[in-house]
Amino acid sequence: MSVGMIDTSRIEAMVAQLKAAAARASPANASPSGDSALQAKSATGAVDFQSALKSSLDQVNQTQLQSRKLAERYEMGDSGVSLSDAMISLQKSSIAFQQTVQVRNKLVSAYQEIMNMGI
Image (tube, rainbow, N blue to C red; front, side):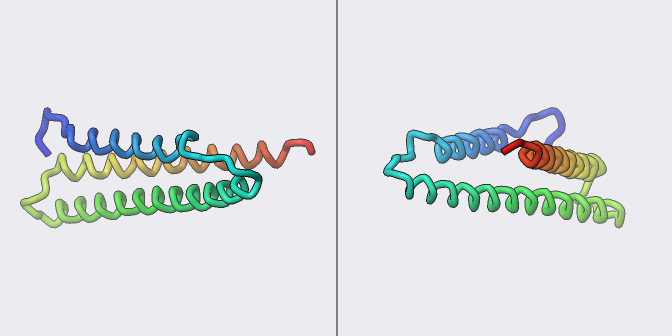
C-alpha cells in the first residue's frame, strides 16, 4: 500500500461484485410458472439471506483477526509492518464492526415492527 495513491483494483473488484449481485437479484431472470415456483423462490431467498449474512459476519471476523495479528506484529517489533498499516487495518476492522452493529439494529427494528403489526 502506498501513501497518497488509491488502489483502484479493489474498487473495480467491488463494483464487479455489486454488478454480479444485481444481476442475480434481477427480476428479469425469474420466470413465473405458478404458485409452486413462488414458494421455491421464497425458500431459496431465505437460504440466500442466511448465507449472505453468515458470509458477511465471517468476513468481519476475519478482518478483525487480521488487524489484531498485524497490530501484534508491529508491537513485537516486526520491521515488515509499519505503524500506518497497523492503524489503518485496525480502523477498517472497527468500521466493519460498526457497520455490522448497525445492520443488526436495523434487523431488530424491522422484526419488532413486524411483530407489532395487527392481523
